[in-house]
Length: 261
Image 1 (cartoon, rainbow, N blue to C red):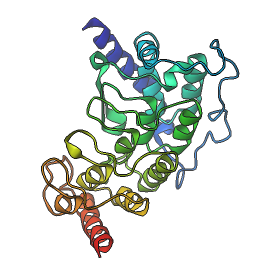
Image 2 (spheres, rainbow, N blue to C red):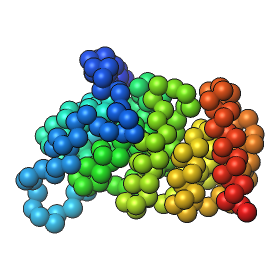
Image 3 (cartoon, rainbow, N blue to C red):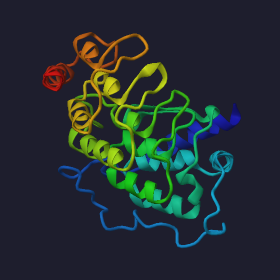
């Protein structure tokens, strides 16, 4: 319990120190720190070339190194801080969060769960540049958290009209993750695909990107619901009754009707 409390306090204190400017994207995702060494890989490693890192080793690193600090840096679009952490501890690129360290990341309105990775954070932060860097460093495009959600599932969440919502950047990171090997129809717990989740979150840019990439709109979750069903129903998701969410809902219904034609 003490370790978890320290982790959450650390996360909150780091978030408070981040300049407000770090949360601002330039128009259509033009990053202010583009050109910094975010995409560079570590020059050397203590491991012999070709020696794979065991999953257990990467998980252990999450308990000893500051994975939470990295997740917060990614959420705040602080590329330099993230690059410094990754260069100092390369295994953070593949580390997974422990159950005792779960927390809510208010900057992105995201619940961070056991098994989440830095690539999940890049997904829900809509940061395709960081996602590219992490994959270069060995992050697993198909990593699953305890709910079975992969980084692509993380990328489709959002709250229309909120400060963190950015449809253009969300579309970009979704298309990049799929290009890098993510399955647009992968099922998480409950049979939830990225398309189910994007519809439930009322994110039309995410729905459009997934359909363009080949996501199957006919798939049903474990309750028998298709994405089209969720598009027409009140989903219970917080914020889906806002004016922005209702406008997104109408766009999504149209996109799904076209895909079914």
